[in-house]
Length: 443
Length: 166
View (cartoon, one colour):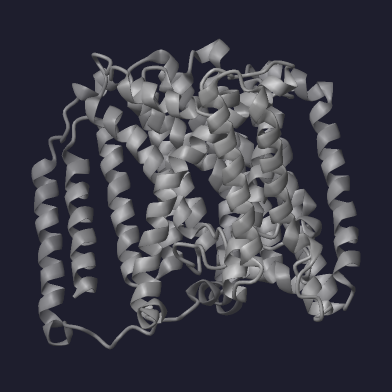
């Protein structure tokens, strides 16, 4: 058995398949709970309670929603293009899932470490747009078609900006393999968000636009287009679109985490190298403490639940927290590879969660952009800024490698220049003359 | 063995969807089959272990150019295009030319028949992205820069023609 576990068949064939199955099985659940989280966060920001009926504090709501969607009638509009109507949601969700093949959840928990990993994820997620465009066209409805057109224009515009934003971190990493990018941040001893903060900002804005989320949710703006490209979809097909949307959110969060936030690295990951004597530190115990605190919170809520079943469920969730805390604690005494795997996955998911939380926060904070504002922001501000930022990153590397400046100094110099350009671009966009010129152009 | 299976799978997929693309009446179906062809070609690149080309093919052609194609097609009145004649009157001339081309290709194969077969095993560069980058910015620096400037000029030209006042 031990021999089989070390063999190359196991590593190259069995493990990736296993990981793939785990990801495909867990993802719908994760997407469902992100929806619940979204509703809860929204409720909190609007001083309401949110879903409270199904399970304690609405914790079983996603499962009820999924069941409802599965049992709904499957409606296909009469003049729809049946083949494309069927293909579009499937392609959408298929491409979203394919992107997970190269996403590193931990040092070992990755389906395949391609040496073009980042490009692969970008390529596959750029195919997701066909799900939207073809679905919108095949529905044979004006709202759907308009939503699809908006979506195509928006995705093509912001893909460029987001990709250029990533480049500024890539030049520091010097590799396209997702694992090497994380390793490069370990070697530099700093997350690349500190080397390329402007790049992170550009990618964040671009990724919100790419996942069609507010304030850039024009393709599905309710007040204008009913539901945009998915107006005519119902039941399970609609659920597939929904799954693809939330899966894409996790993908962009995973890319941002890997490139800018240190991937599966712990904060201060290089600490142990400088002080070899310390075997366990406070930050290693942090996951255990976090889960214990969550469990304690759940147990405290148990007596307040109104129904007996809800008391049991709440206690069960608390117990789950204790078990997870125990696993996190046991991992500290496991071999270093196992420890790095379990805690790496924890830190990766925490960072992804934080990124997604910011997405939700934006959604409930900013009003929706108008379409011309969206295009102006993309083409006149983000893309020029991204180009300048790439040049800035290259200059910073040249300064630190050729002239021997410390990276922090060279980064601060180029950052100042980039921000100056950004302010100039922003001021230029606000000029009233630009508005009159556009009005004269008739758009 | 697996290599051959993969190659024939992608090759058959590419050719079949290319034929379907030309013969479909509905242009959006044609576009979908063109996308399939491009993806299958990307698959062949991957089977040749040129993973950089594989990814670039998908990002540029499928993720970029074809999106614009589909975008424009969606704005076209489909009912009109459904009633147009699909192949024009010169189809016999075109067919004859295609036959000539096929004869040329077969002739080329016939002349070089002795060297057809499994060639020397391809040198697999472990990092062919780096190899492409070094070739572009080292040995082929000048042509690469000239091509970039040409593209820039074309882009500026398109913007100038598309918008009188920017």
